[in-house]
Image (cartoon, rainbow, N blue to C red):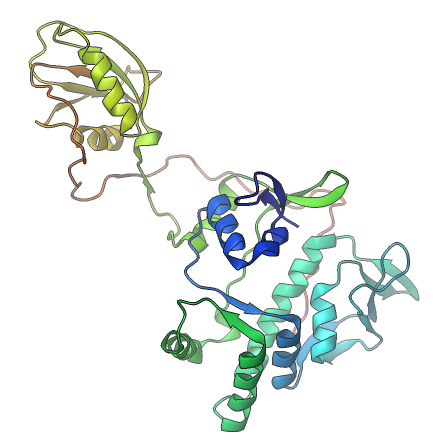
Length: 360
């Protein structure tokens, strides 16, 4: 139910609607919305999901009471209706209804009650089920040729892959999963806030450091990795230090074309011999990246009093324009954010949180 801009549509909607025009549009939506690269995809349909669960002889989950799915009209959209409780082994059909249920209800003191955590509870159930399914698969003798054949048959009939994913890639992926243990499986949930848009219930990404930390996992960014400097993150003021007509304007145009943000131009001290970059406190990495666009090299000067921009360029007699391609850095220029991570508040009073699910 995450509400995002849908790639190529000019509008926004629930992220699952991006799949209506095929996996390519969903991949574009994920990449454009979250800057997460998607190299390959595997698509498992409902029949495949049920078949995979049945192939491992069911998946055991813990149910503290009977559960069912009932919407406001009393219908059962997912088909979930389980009267047993405790550690229950779910068949393929039951497992599909369990992870799809959007109107989850449980029995308490003889009365049916709706899960107050809504979609967050459904996500928790899905994640818990995946972990338990992995444990079930690993606990089986999957080196048994008969069991492997059964799983392969399910996969052939119900799993679609992208054109660039060949048999060798799948074999390699399978080899990497040989050592997988359920305990090593990490699960992440994006922080979201519930909202209604055009009468529909949706989830909006709660943007901030916590969501970026989750997204960075899938971007391949290690925890605590320094933030790479880009030209668009650097704001500059340009001063003409030679008196040559139009020099500051030419530098501004070239810097803007290179992706830098130029806040303004003006006149600097006449007679400047070497192009100089004055940079504010803590902006040395940005100044270094900026300097690599100039030939010959420029003079870097720290100015702790500088405010309003990251750097001020004063063109000198040595100024001949900008390089078409900046000189490579050695090592790459990076800057580490000094913003402290805010303390994460606990659940608010009365705020429903998905319960911890016991093991079986």
